[in-house]
Image 1 (cartoon, helix red, strand yellow):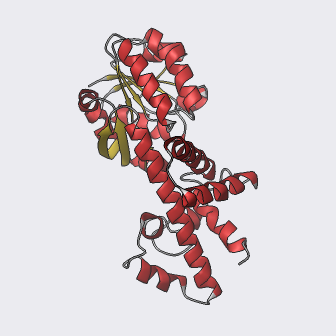
Image 2: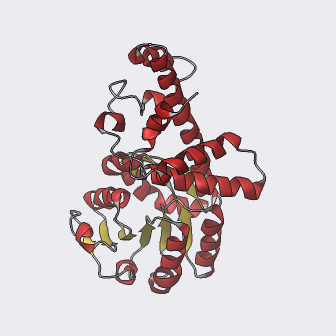
Image 3: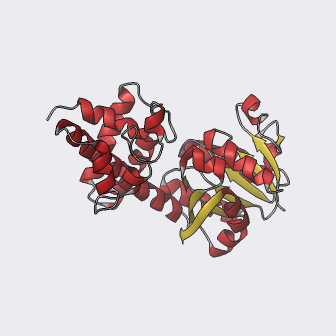
Amino acid sequence: MASIGFIGIGNMGAGMARNLAKAGHAVTVFDLDMEKAKTIEGVSVAASTADAVSGAQMVITMLPAGKAVAAVYRGEVFPNAADGALFIDCSTIDVETARVLAEEAAAKGHAMLDAPVSGGVAGAEAGTLAFMVGGSAEGFARAAPLLDVMGAKAVHCGDAGAGQGVKICNNMMLAIQMISVAEGFVLAEKLGLDPQKLFDVSSAASAQCWSLTTYCPMPEVGPQTSADNGYKPGFAAALMHKDLGLAMEAAQASGAGTAFGQAAFDAYAAMVERGEADMDFSGIIKAVRAAKG
């Protein structure tokens, strides 16, 4: 069993840390919301990041943005981590920051992985997340026992930054697909079609995708989703907007053409601007329904 310092106990981090503790690992957590950290069963709560990582064999971070990740590692993790500790950053951040931090960690004698996740809060709680991992093969092998506890699948995507690159490509595709599914169901509504019949056909035909078959934005159609709960977020629109922004930055830097990705970014930017940042990203169907042809 490993000793783990876990920094960032938000909606995702809480479930991940809880599952590690249930598996018998010694988990010490720190979060700015100390009261929330104290609600996680089986973990120890540290008074600071430095205290949480001191002596830990592995450090896991789940933080909101690249600037926060860089500040935490440079300010408190690097100076206080045990010799040879493995760092696993599960935040979704820009590729360049992931690569630079991995280089800085290596210079200090540490392996560092970028390991963003897919699967939302439900996946974090159930231990069924998918991890996209960038970094050394040796680091990935060391991390595998922890990733197996927190998730159902972990893929070593390549060198440092590759995990972040795969994550933003995945989420760009997800956003485009969700909007396409929403448009299909809204068009079906206007044509007077039965939405369940559309689902029955499309979920077994060429339009099938996760946004349709598993996370349909139409209430009372297919498996139960956020749409059946007033679009309470499993993955908030604000987070999709953030990830699409990272994808657009990467597209610009690499010269990739992502016209539909840009359209999706604009749609989620508008959703956030309307005060719907905390709505589930599948709630984009409301904007589609309100749009004029």
